[in-house]
Image 1 (cartoon, rainbow, N blue to C red):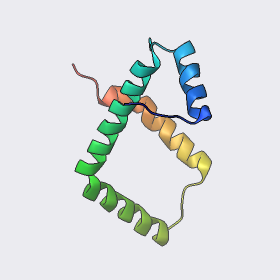
Image 2: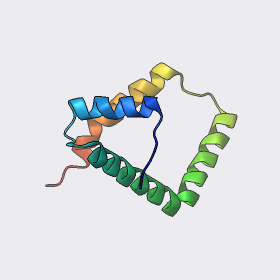
Image 3: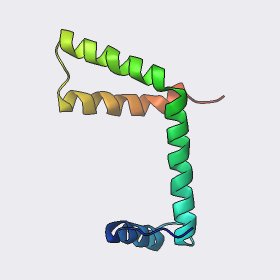
Image 4: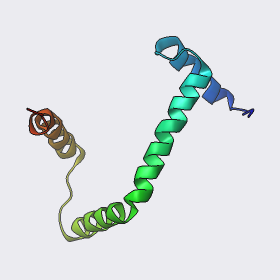
Length: 90
């Protein structure tokens, strides 16, 4: 299969090849397509759950005050710091 890429995409691939662990453009594209497929597959399997969470968030946003960007960043940082401790296998 021959694929034509936009010059911007070719430039991104060259950058990734120069700095990353990929040995060839084919290997990089294969990895990227594999990851995209996994994401699309996960989304297809969890579509209803994701839609429900979006609806819950939308309803919550309509009812009350929203968090500003600084509050979101602070909450995410706290969540990321706590995550390794809560998911540790012992």
